[in-house]
Length: 122
Image 1 (tube, rainbow, N blue to C red):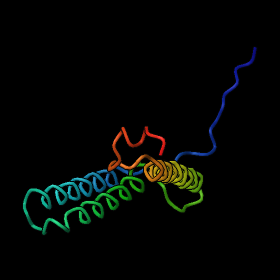
Image 2: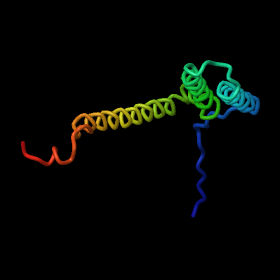
Image 3: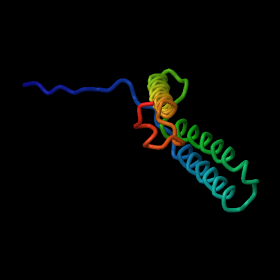
Image 4: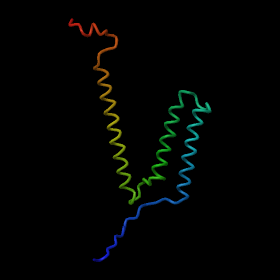
């Protein structure tokens, strides 16, 4: 029997310790800003939801780029396409579910109608 060795010619794109620490610090800052927006009363109540949503999207992008190494480089393109298709699939499921629930709500019996009236055959 001969011993065969398998070599992996496509090496995964890994970040450096500096990039991981930078990403971690950015995530901590974004989390602190979200916490401060809610607990510190820095923003008016009607703007807090928008601020938290914006900070959450920025933090998601930081994590995708720094920790999951999604980008436009040739060795990262496959992972980026998989990530984009995953987002598309999740969006389709969520939007479809909301559509079905909305249509079910519209076609349900109105709450103003009593059970007796609904059961009677007028």
